[in-house]
Length: 171
Image (tube, rainbow, N blue to C red; front, top):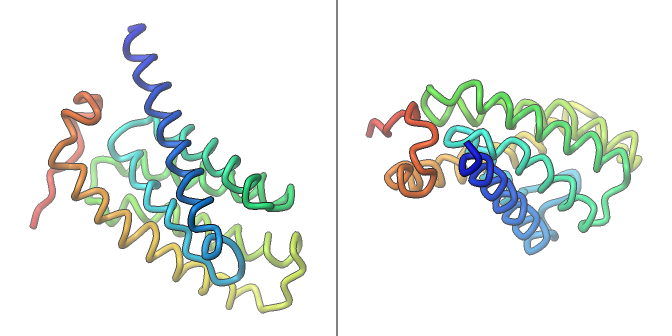
């Protein structure tokens, strides 16, 4: 039991570190009305391990802080990532496309309001939902699925068979 807790804490810390690193390295495209946050590809990881849920949440908090986000963005954006990660975990026995839907939806619903009320962006909220959604489809949907298929072949070695219910890709 102790080894399993250490494994989950280690996985969560690594995922958080990856999220922060990717957000910081690609900061130029990770923030704003039109954003492509490469780190959002990691939101597929709850399909492999529940440790990804707190890892993504902490990573988003730290990534937003280092990126210079304002407090409402740090809080609300990170909660959107947490909700999306939990939704992905709940869909872990489905195909990866379905696991991408919760983070995309959560960010499309939350981030436009953060942009409007925390940053004063005057664009229409539905338009910002579309631009944020497009970036999320690219980051979570396309890059996330690519990451899923790259990892699923090695899931037992990488995740120590923690979640044996991860479906194999059907090509």
